[in-house]
Image (cartoon, rainbow, N blue to C red; front, top):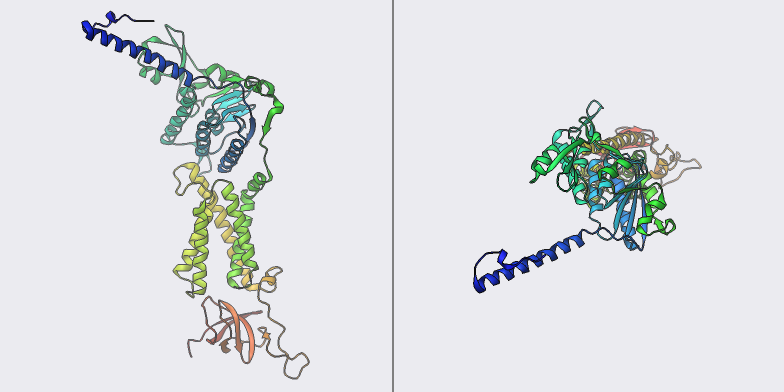
Length: 515
């Protein structure tokens, strides 16, 4: 519609005409801007060239996020322009769920559709809200995202108001980003929030708002409050069926089967590529199980102890290296570890080597090495350095339990190994084996130059080191070569020694201090 220049009485003559012309130009520019905005908000295209399906099932953990990241990269490499995320999950970690939702919301290379055939509850509801479109079976359920934590009495309780407010704000933002009613998303988190249906008295437009939202509207007097959304009654975390979600505008539509799901996109079921779980995904999942994790850590630490007890043997070091490579590899692909944890672990081993071979005894370097190794193993099981929420504290306690439980087992195993090295199967293959005792002079089995067992060696005997004792090595006692260990000190060849303890085949020696 055109507006005559005399309807804008700014001035007369040529100046008035100029201003009128500017007004007309501004009007046309506004129409063009409105058209551009309409195009920007136009619905997504209805025909796609390549569609992929990604199953998203089970509890949401950092491993789930890492799995989804791999599948999204795979989909992008395939030039997929339609991603069907099939969600069937009871939820999980709140922070991880929001991280996944934000990542999905930011996808600009494909149209992401959350398909919910059964349930998307708790954190899984946030994941669905992060998708560009939500399609549900009419009987499926969405919502019930009230955050809880495990208290010191092992009872689940609702998180404090401060944290709940943060989650509610994030849920609102997710809904707003994809054109869904923010108040309904907030009601999934806040059991005290009541949402009402409002109708505009002039246009009959319908909106779902809380009373506070309604009061903050510039034209609040034009919106008439109708009935409460029954699922948002006080004391309830909003949970809706697929049919009800469509009515409330939380879901875009419903679909009873795959054909109904794909029809609007112009894609046939046999044209969809399913990104199945691979052997790598399965192996990572197995290695991230708490029992397997503990087993790997135990074997790795025991092998490391054996390697440090008998340096130069090598097999213990190889086994330890394999175990910790598997541990950090599974944590890398599980999404909880990075180069920081690997660096801390390598630095810890380096400190221990310095303590053993450069600074004899057990002091600052050795203690630092142990602490760095423990810190790396704990941090590798979480995505943060310092916990700030109940979920994160639970994760820390979980990691600490596994690591220190494994360490306790290792300490017991180390005591056994120290006592029975040479007698326990497998361990005996890693330890230095003394030859048969030297026969008395004149017997057939007499020999010279070999290493004697502890037979004939008693506490108080003296001799000298023939090889470096780090802490294991060979000494000469009374003309016999004997395999011995020290109590941790490093002794050079030629150092005078005294036998401190004899237990089976194990001979413990120490320096005589130049006596």
